[in-house]
Length: 392
Image 1 (cartoon, rainbow, N blue to C red):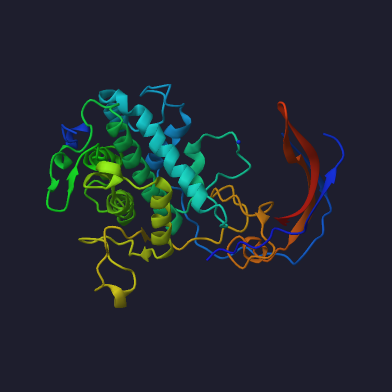
Image 2 (cartoon, rainbow, N blue to C red; image 1 turned 135 degrees about the vertical axis):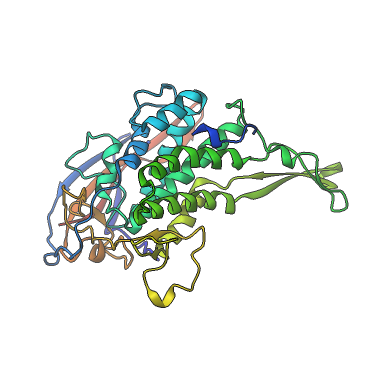
């Protein structure tokens, strides 16, 4: 559990003055002044031992790179860094290009939100701030728990974005779920209506767009790492399906709710992200030697079945403490930490034992605002001094 203790001293005073297509179904005012007071705390950290791990596959980096190829207002299939098969699918379905970009954006944004307090915070190394998101994969250890989460959350993001686009009427081949129209239970006083999200088209498109390039790369050799990536893609899609919910609206005299109209809808992507983060925390290590199917690395646990929603990894993660540009690890130096927290955002854990510096940050903002007749608002300018702690 993450700690959420106080960031540091906080004092304020008022001052004077005044942010693949084939497999698809056919239907469906503030000033900040930073003054440094480098109070060094703690000792030096050590880089944890870990195997040298290669970057994510180029196929996956190209998929993530589409998020930087322009916004939804700039459709196109040749400029984004896609594989040939993905470009062909994109040309066949140009109306889905905005959803493809939105899916990549959703996945990366949620990854950064879920890991914002961790040593690995789902961001590229600071040494290459102008690189496109295609470089994002270089910071991930191939086959690690972090790699598993990124594959799952971006596959889920694509399902979510495509399904939303279908429900909004932006795609001619899909719309609302026609299976959930007109049915229901008269005895229980409800019926299906409205526009239920039809995730079947989104699931099929995600499989065609993301899985087909991996299957083509794996060929007949049976690569355990690629099989793991396929499983984690599907785990992300299953998370979207599992968290579908039913919303209803009441009808009747004076809100008596004599009859209810109900429809199925996807959960917010934040909820899906939290679900996948929990799966990440309980991810399963599997053997990199693929036989007939993926199996747990621990021989004593091999009789325990692997579920579709489980996240799988092959290699143990490095500690992510020290910057390593070759592996794409940004390290934690300069990261803001919480001095009073015992969670992953706490200075002791986040700074890997290296200690932290404390800086005083001065904020000046409007406060004690009052409405004055007539007709304006009068405020005072307040000054706040806060201690901010950053890792050495």
